Length: 80
Image (cartoon, rainbow, N blue to C red):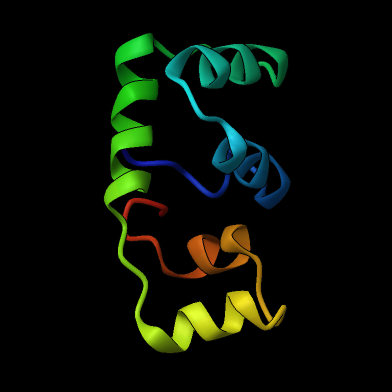
């Protein structure tokens, strides 16, 4: 599921990364003014669950140099 960085903010991405279920993500999206389907939410959650970070990126996040949202904002291939 591609996400346009011109439409979503890094803060919204951070909130989305906290969602554990498709229903939570759909509710969040609606509260932010977006309309997504349950299927789109499930696809996003599947992508995030299967995303692998390399050791350098894990160290940045664990050490506080970057949040998961910061890393994703800069590196996730589906953000354009």
